Amino acid sequence: MSLWAAWCEKGDREAIVAVVASLDGEGRVLFAQSADVLRRMAAGSEPGELGVVVGPVGRGVSDVNLAAALARDGRARQVVLAGRAVSGSLRSRAARAGIDLVVDLAEVEEVDDAEVPCSPGERDAVSPPPRPCPPEMAPAAPPVPDPDAGSPRVVRDGAPVLVLCSGRGGVGKTTLAASLVAVGARWGLEVALLDLDLSCGNAHAAFGLPAGTDLARLGDEGNPAEGLLARLFVTAAPGVALAGPCARPEAAELAAARMGALIDHARRSFDLVVADTSTTFTDAVAQAAQAADRLLIVSDARRGSVAPVARMSGLAVRLGVARTRIARLENHADERAAAGPVAGRSEIGLEAARIHRVCDGGREVEDLVAAGRVADLVEPGYAFSDSVAALLAQLLSELGRLPEHEEARRAAEGPPARAWRWPFGTRREAR
Image (cartoon, rainbow, N blue to C red; front, side):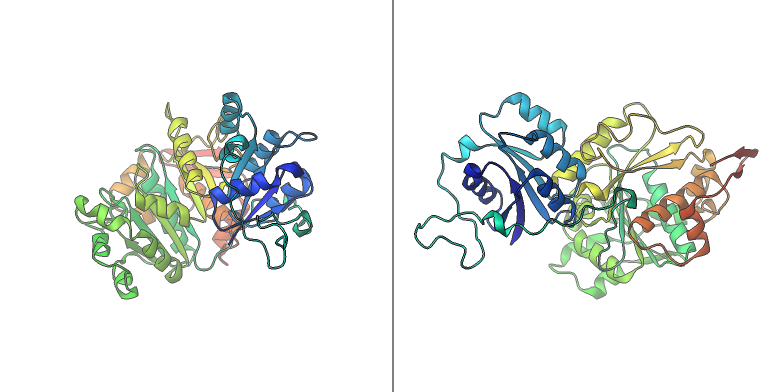
């Protein structure tokens, strides 16, 4: 049974129940007593735990503004705005605000009321039609999280899963994935690198391997056994195990449906899981995104980079990925320049997402990766490698999984002013 919270006029509660029933046959509705209570209910829930319906509201706070605020908060599984005589301009405004769905109650009321289960003893013994759970059922409002406490901490069973995706090629996603696992292994973690670009992945090349492992073997298994899943990993470097892609591109579709089982196995077997993905949002990428503790949408400073990020973030939200689990990763960044003002604003699902940056390492990065020397690439003291380490430390700190390692602790704190080492000399930078 899934939970929904709603706030509307009392006379519209049965219509809201019908809306929830049409969206979720097993949904249970809790009616908040005010807009403030509704927002605190959402803020106190786990990401994705609670669906929310707002409106129609005849007075006080604007229902569309409240729904937009709940969408920005990023805690709700789905944010639905309900009203009557819904206009096209309202739908357009709601879409820009990140509201998932706009419902016209006049259309819902034309069909029979749907039944929504309530707790035993709460049904009206006289009238046969079901009635919504009364407002008294609404739980006491949970405390509002401290806004100064930092990013939400989501701790799941097993290892944290970091997934890198993008809407265009050439942004350095594979290099970043390989660099992250190399840094994690240096911190003493047992790390799994999943190459989910099943047709054309080449993450193995960053470690000097001639090939990866063949995930197409999963296509023959209805429910892959643990033994088979374990055999799909090969040691790429000390502390790093690699799985994927497929040996033959045409077999990718057969393996894609089994990626959830592979990710679950990796989560149970390793300390950290990093997944590299294809440019397009395949079934394998969708499963990885839904399993991710942090979905990192990678872009660079090239012209037209915002549109692919917007498409990928919007799709991730529609797949049910909580906004609190989505972040933007700007690669090839100029360490001396401030983040651009447009970053993270126009992308659906990234309205309040954190923006991480990795410094441009120049041709040296390309040369070392091409030579299979990613472990040398991430040695401390370079702008690129130190920013990758800071990225990993920040992500693991948010998830409560920062290892007890001196270098990891320093990376989480951020280095003081120092001299960066560059390929052709030394340049003083302050951070």
